[in-house]
Length: 278
Image (cartoon, rainbow, N blue to C red):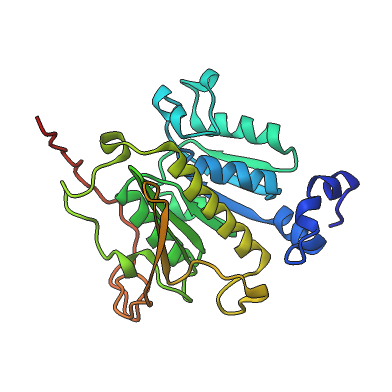
């Protein structure tokens, strides 16, 4: 493909970067990214990937826009309340960049449809807000050999890592099983600072673009590497970031030498019951 004059102007700030250039922008325009969850994390991811010119964006979400979403889910606006999130996201993306093709999946990401939805996407972004979905996404991506970005937020905290199946540790290498009920609340129970979603989602978008451009820890091209085998943890109260390094677990139940998880399953987790002080 050749860039049009309009595209050269639109993406000029990318093209002037030696790490991107015209060829890199062509890679972005030809790439396909699946975003699971059009909420706090998925919203900034979708906005920045659309602005960057990712050729095809798949968006998975079964929910409709709620008034409480608007504090952090910046891809939706007040008139979108009551509208399916995938429709609202698609309309916003179309306004940002007509170069982007949007494929919507107004459904839950489940064991029965996971591999079919992953299809021929180049990269997957986990923008979900619950552990059952995160473990399913990890297992499905490992089985389908799909690289993905994990992200999670709560209150003032966030964490993210990138997984390259077969090359790096997966989510289960770090978190083998879901936490028991009553240990970790959800954002709807404990709250979340809206800007935290923007910070973490933007990092996930950057990881996605670096992968598309060909950066990985094997080549370490132009001294840029992905968040593989590293968990980046942030706290917005202190505005501090720290990094936890780990290795691929040879006994991991899904990506280890002898995996015990050979088929996808839907997981359940009882909601945490928060006890408030009198």
